[in-house]
Length: 146
Image 1 (cartoon, rainbow, N blue to C red):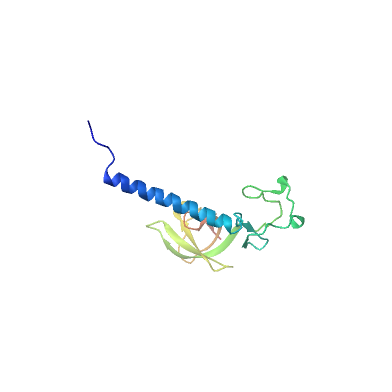
Image 2 (cartoon, rainbow, N blue to C red):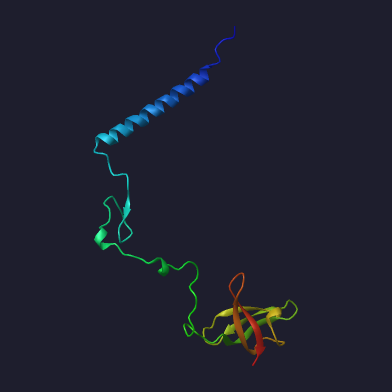
């Protein structure tokens, strides 16, 4: 006849599990005796956490049609600015095919690549260009001499 398959390590692990279950049950009963604390947490109008539910008379009704998912569509005439900017080429390397343009109004530098030019440009040239989002920021595209 074979002996019991229960080893000392198995017995110890089972004792620990039983002890944890018993402690957890004791904590649950202690919370229940303290008056059954509210297990819900609410957020008030200012974004703070509280245990009191919000006043239903102050509740704001929102129509499902008013909820916009994604980027809102542009309305004609809203935030219309001239897409063509003017600036001066501050640096341009013909051998590498890139450079930088400083905007006349904002004095910001924009990267320009040879693939985005319409005319041959050099340092100091006054140019007109449009801006386009690139991997690392705004890039000057459709660059032409003025």
